[in-house]
Amino acid sequence: MSIKQALLALLTEGEQYGYELRAGFETRTGGAWPLNIGQVYTTLDRLEKSGLVERREPDAEGHVHYGLTDAGRASADKWWVTPAPHPSPGRDDVAMKIALAVSIPGADVARVIQVQRRSTMETLQDLTRAKRASADGDDAWELVADSLIFRAEAELRWLDHTETRLAQRSKRTLNLRAAEEKRTDSRRAADAAEASR
Amino acid sequence: MTADTAPALWMSGVTKTYGTGEAQVTALVDFTLDVQAGEMVAVMGTSGSGKSTLLAIAGALLTPTSGTVEVAGQSLDRMSRTALARLRRERIGFVFQDFNLLPSLTVLENVALPLDLAGASRATARSQARRALASVGMRQRAANYPDELSGGQQQRVAIARATVGSRQLLLADEPTGALDSVTGDHVLEGLRERADDGAAVVLVTHDARHAAWADRIVYLADGRMVDQARASLPDQLLTGKP
Image (cartoon, rainbow over all chains, first blue to last red; front, top):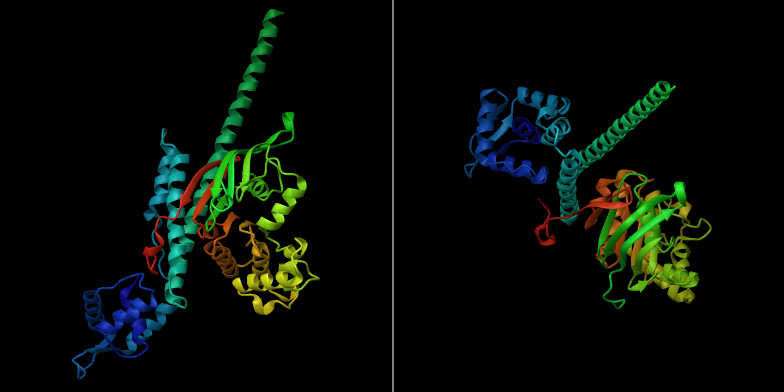
């Protein structure tokens, strides 16, 4: 999540000071990503140095408001139409673990999948209940909860898919082995018949 | 056990085989499950894992080859066909993927139908049907015909019909199959609310997101229960955010 771009986006609504920006960010993202005020001010400093925001004179209460420069507004506009980066695939601990389990003799893949599925399913249950328990009309939180729910669901579908694939593969291996044994047996029988003639 | 303290559904050591000899197929093996009033249990598993057989046996539509089934404390084992039919009518509600509402009856008449069939007075049937419709937010559509409603609304009516009167065991077979994901969520919410009101709900689904509405999830593979998951957070911690 780019805090920098999030603050620029919030500032398109008008000048704001640090605490206001933090509160605005947390409300709109359903409180899913708590932001500390130090992060907000460090980011604003960096944005100011890059010429994307400008500091205004403190108001009567001493709040220092920040506003967008033209370059800042252009950067905010561009952000909406730039796809957000996806987390790198190597970071998926579940996929990594199961790939290892499949390839290492002695690892019980079925068990690894089962344990993972139960845990992910319980997370999905908790998210579903938490979403339901939230106050009606908290759109921001429901949207974020849905995103976590769909991710958990995707992981479960992948686990089911992997399990079915592995089951089919081991069935195929067994069938091949059985067919091979049958061929060997009939060859031996033919040889034996040949020898006794 | 009395009907008040007994689980809404109790299945013990239930096995179901179809056919004989080489053609024999075992759909359910030594399956045990109890579902309490107010509890929602989801059943998941690949096709052919025994989910539908389980639901048919729980709903007294199919007799197990061996094992015991009780609904609200009444054993189904030696019940006559007539008694089973009465039990189904009075205690068990079904929700199917394709709603199964009668097109020539209004929404209210559809929901009142099980009570009419059970011999309730017209006034009682109508007033209980109205109450059931209100519980799924469909009371204002009572005079409409099913084809005047959206898929999600029809399924909510089907849920009202399944719980009308004193029926406390609700069996749902892929009830969201034909609906888009947002509408499907509303249907699940309807089922969840029935459980929160005290009904026992058994939901067969292949959709993990829908199963997650349940208190407990049972996994079936080749007719056997292979795993169970249950929500880990107590309700009081769920103030809205994780």
